[in-house]
Length: 333
Image 1 (cartoon, rainbow, N blue to C red):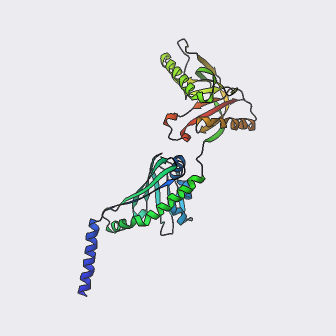
Image 2 (spheres, one colour):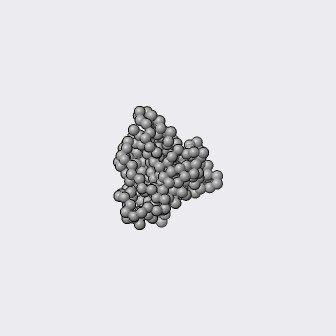
């Protein structure tokens, strides 16, 4: 009996001593080439509701109870899960960082500790190279340190399944080209400094707008005027594929010095308007116009002036095309 007791105690001491020298950190990593575009893969990873389509753990227990935060997409988004399946358990996932090339998550496994996950997205000619990692630290928990030796064998295969599902889903779904919401509203009386451009092709619009805004802003500084909104442009109906528009800035007050560089000062009265809040590339804004015409007709209104595009966001700061915001505003009566 004493010999057995000594053997047991000796084994416990040995296990403890070995555990003290085991690494506290555990790392899991898997990489595959996903055929979907970087934009689509990024959306599938950063929109947590999309995880239901490719996450390996959602497939293990489709009946798990899911709770989404008020924000479930991008940095700060989160969801939690509850499952009676021992391979899934309970937990919470939060997006700590989100940029087109890297997404960082925190996974809280409740009584089983926390881990930091990461997705590195690298554009390739054939699609997107996706590296999925998970790092955890057991601290002085000796049992967790032993588990850390096996975590790659336990979690790695799930990562592989998830990445292959991500590959399939990213090919089946196309990233949204634009989003749009419509409403009726009112705009107050407004003053504008504008320059008229004629005979402009669609390919030239961006450069011409930049030229106009540079001249208008330079004059505003000289005249001591301030803007009251985003850069904008009034568009006439195109003819033979060429555009005529008046572009500039809404301003406070009238110019106190003579106008130059073909500048026009214009005052427009308050008006009821139909508005399209558009997110997407500028070349796609043409889809907003028939939608607005239908809205105007449905509301029993008629068009009373040229439509205006207000360029709400700076395209140079947009991380993806859907970050480009434009309001299309059409006066009605």
